Length: 204
Image (cartoon, rainbow, N blue to C red; front, side, top):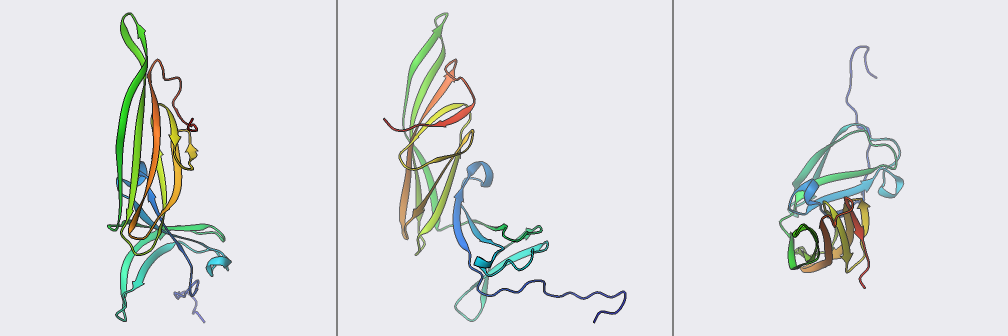
């Protein structure tokens, strides 16, 4: 019972063995130059939740340190979470997952002239993006790359368009190993640029 005019703090939700996924996201335009680790789960039956919406609050994550104690991983404030909605907790960069990008080649061609001056050309670039995983388990990796201008992207592996200027690829990096994502980019400059968009093309 609660007396008139008084209040009492009580647990809203209790769940044991909540399952979650771990994914690393590389989005330099959003999170900076390093991959960021996320814990993901949903407020639903599959994840041992879903009986009611979750109120505003702070999620704190801890890990069993193997010494009869807990190690603090991080925390994040969340707003109201409806039933079935996804929950994302950003744990920041992980020193055991390294990302590097390298330009392998650049060529220029298809020059256009006006009054003896170059007013348009195309530039072909080759890129290799490398993800090194120093953890003892495979990891899931999501890569988003954003480009400005009129650009044609020809990837070596499955890639989708996230929006008109952003491409996205998903893959895994093996434990104590690496994965590579290769593509070529044809960038239209000057009068050769017709619109501000990224277009995915197939290798010929």
